[in-house]
Image (cartoon, rainbow, N blue to C red; front, top):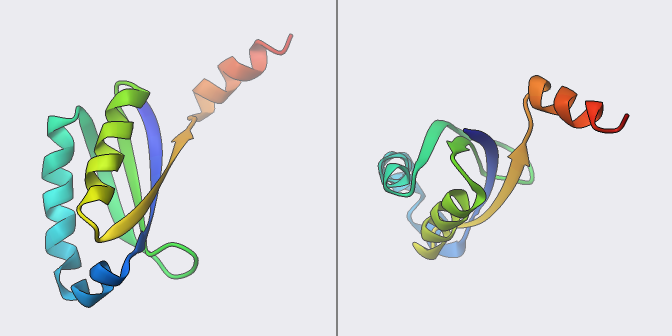
Length: 97
């Protein structure tokens, strides 16, 4: 499975209902499974992003569908980054020659 980092910022709607953020995170974790995504961890952060997710998915389409479904609920704006493990990065670097 490929690793992805999700970066989320609360929308105005998400901030109005911020007291529900932990419950919503549980629902996001559950819904991820139907898209073929495993949410390894969800953390609330300070700074440019309000929430960081660590996810795994079989392919880019699965994580894209999950990200769009999550954002379409209207509580967060979502950005997804493909992350490479040390071993994956070593394989990339070996291709440089």
